[in-house]
Image (cartoon, rainbow, N blue to C red; front, top):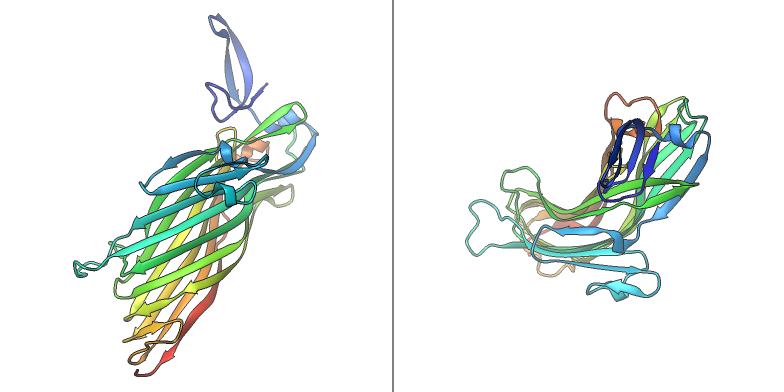
Length: 346
């Protein structure tokens, strides 16, 4: 059996069974392998832990020009423009970008989003073995952490196709290693941060929100039920500024897609999407401070969070029965009102 931490030739770690020794080469012994499972290696061992991911270990691929990366870790070590002010173990991405305006909007119309995502992620792993030739009695794999974000949307934005438009602005990858006795268990974590826009292009907004909380997404295994999804998101927000002009609707999200797996396989994928939603009916020009209201109509601005995801068949790397189909995590949605009202002619 081979269980290796990330190394040249196996950047995401390696879990394999040697089936044949081919011979000696200039660089070492050549062998033929086939995929292995954790139960064959760990047997009746048990392990459980939540391991924070070192923010400096992330490889970051910036997908838009104006993206800034900051992080902070123990030992007063930090990097980036916001690094010195971040909580230990946190990674922050700041973004500023123009977003598509509505078809037929005047040339002077524009829309933009400015904001940041700050996350302190950890990988959650558990294994309760019953022997090398039997499925484990229990298992868990997931990602969780603290989340803080703030963003502002200005202008008359719309998705060009009428469906939500997702704009990724950074991809991150890390391979934290959990040591179970002498065995390195390699967890692969990928995050893609994005802005998502949907709307009819008729409403003009100037909204800003700060949001903070925690999240968890993963899969738990037990002999009776097999793999079952686990998901939660507990977040609160503070409206900083809100105004809506004209009738229509607009929804913007500043979120992240996450995938977590073992030794290069994807076992759990999740999509965390905190959002702002503004809508108005009638002919409305309104602001959260109550000043300058004109004509009749109703308006509202809402904050919320969506969490969804999937358990995938590659979870069989634990030595559990193969998942015959992907299992949805289910969609979790929470929404709260930030500001709004019914207005008479001003």
